[in-house]
Length: 209
Ligand code: FE
Image (cartoon, rainbow, N blue to C red; front, side, top):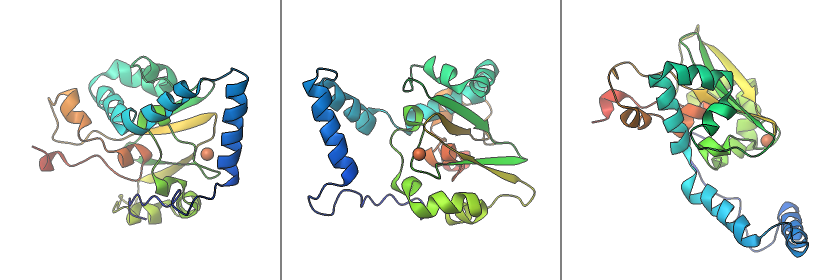
């Protein structure tokens, strides 16, 4: 599993899944009734595929590392704090930021399907949607972490947050030591997608430059 993104969802011939057929049918009906503009829909999908990615989240984390008031706002209401930076979530759902500390490591999963904080991390990696990750993240989070090359101290509690369509999570990783005085932009370069899912840690500042 270790972080490989092999996309084998859409490459088995031209047969459409039931979900794809339903989506296609819905899109046709909604377009015919004038509720949606297919061009606008394409623009939204393209934005998620090309413009909205984990960099959005990295910038949010770096700001929380350098601005205590923003960090407080983020932990109190991540939907609001993230929207204040221009990353809008879809209507009606709620984003929660969970903070890593020396005593607690947080990890996110959606045990039912693939709920994910799109507005800050973009599209979910294929492994996030896979059945093994979804079940093992809950039953054996340390085993999953070790697959990702992460070994935490024994007395660090691992807490797993199960996302839903209404409530999604982003992990606020710990700011790495040795980054005193770093700019937000430089700090953001340390924040990986996986560190915001909790299956990784920020990059080691000594390896940057
Ligand atoms: Fe889900």
